[in-house]
Length: 179
Image (tube, rainbow, N blue to C red; front, side, top):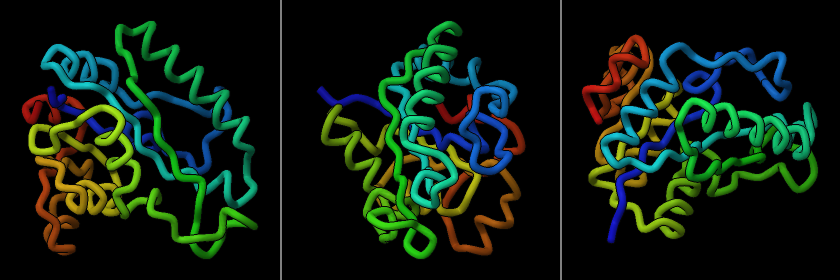
């Protein structure tokens, strides 16, 4: 049986994007994220986080730092009644990565590797799935994978200028109507 997925970018969707956030004290949840995710779950969506984390590859923080913050973030969601099914991440960057992290890996958005991992692990129906992101690379990843509904947090003109087929919203509360 296939399942619906709600794919969330992390920085800028789940938390305020201050740039290379890896400490709890710098992690501020975006208003409405818990309510939106509870709504998604009530509509039978599994919640997945798909996040580029080039800060690991650039040497700004360690994989252990990321894992620790991710575990804490998932616990905070659970305390709010939201189960994050899985967090997928890409530590790579094609030009600024260090050592093994300097590559254009299929996991790094705008490529769709993280979405394909979820499809393979959880039997996801992409036509009924939704992706929400705050960067064009997020939307490209969703479109490239075939996600049925892609939502951009920001100015719709950016989507139009880039030729992206997506919905735009100004705040997370507006995303409910797409679930």
